Amino acid sequence: MKIYSAANPPQAHIVCELLRSHNIACEVRGEGIFGLQGEIPFGEASEPHVWLLDENSIAEATLLIKQFEQPHSEASWSCPQCGEINEGQFAICWQCGESMVEA
Ligand SMILES: [Zn+2]
Image (tube, rainbow, N blue to C red):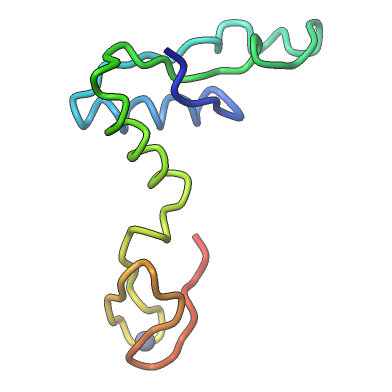
């Protein structure tokens, strides 16, 4: 089943590799016709996407993609001002008050 629609082929590969690194079988589909975008109507069929081969992993795959799309909500970050490591849900350093730098 299609688990993720990417804006471009590299993005699809990044997500696919992310899932594979967690032993979830998947592959990138749709990128072969990406170059023809100017000639065919852009839409679902012409988008590069990640195809989930192991449907038993759908819950884990969905969670990983969610984290990929919202990295700051889960990942910790280090403060550019004082170097303190902060939890992902905090947008401001608890140590010195510096704002999180957008990636
Ligand atoms: Zn700080």
